[in-house]
Length: 333
View (cartoon, helix red, strand yellow):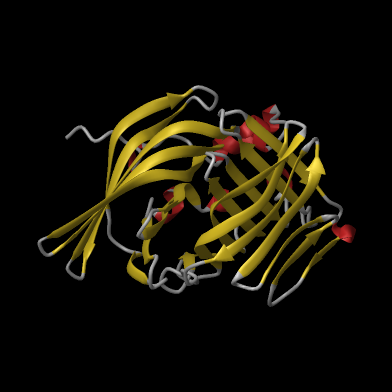
């Protein structure tokens, strides 16, 4: 399965997310490809607009060795510096956006996360953390010119995430001096609830990654809440601490708004008794939430402390059932 992801926070407060995928989540168990894309827009008033589009494989072109994804009239095309993301309006929702990448691509370590000793099951992630966005968004019967900051990543994997991962938190933040990317992956019981705490800090002036982490981190959950639709406990306020090479990073995230909520029912369209039984046997209760949050970055190096704060978009993909061993527990300290 492969996907091309874009999100942006516009100067007028609009948030936009566009993702192109080679297969639908509810059809991931089938051998055939089911190309699809999703566009989500949260307007300045907080109202959510969304369209999910499936495209016949015969009407798609996905080239190897370059970012050229064409799904019917919709496209995601770029050359590592300039990208055009175009979704012809469906149900009145679409976009025509240009992303100009401003920093170097970020790849944590090798870019591969392997599950199992034979490394046959892999998840690969490379991102373009910061870019200038211009163009237009269409929703609510109008086309709106927009400018802002955006992010793009490319993911591909040869294993179903639900069979290897209990949950992950992924997000990015564009600040004045720095760009932050975070991808906190927690494997499922089969892989010992192993945490892979990926974090990258990119200097906006040089475009270089000045700090990255792929191994040790301390995560402290300060507040939890019971998400109404999924009925699962989720973090509301949490802090990550990374420290090595004479530099300490404290990163605090507090969500402000849910902009997308998907439980098993709307991920898989229909969840019948047989599906529920299969989920129970696999200890699964898949859900996915995307948030707008406020995050604070604190960098401590020798006696110097730098602070920055701003909005971010992050997602919490929660495939497993609640489990105390899976690091989703309130820090009582």
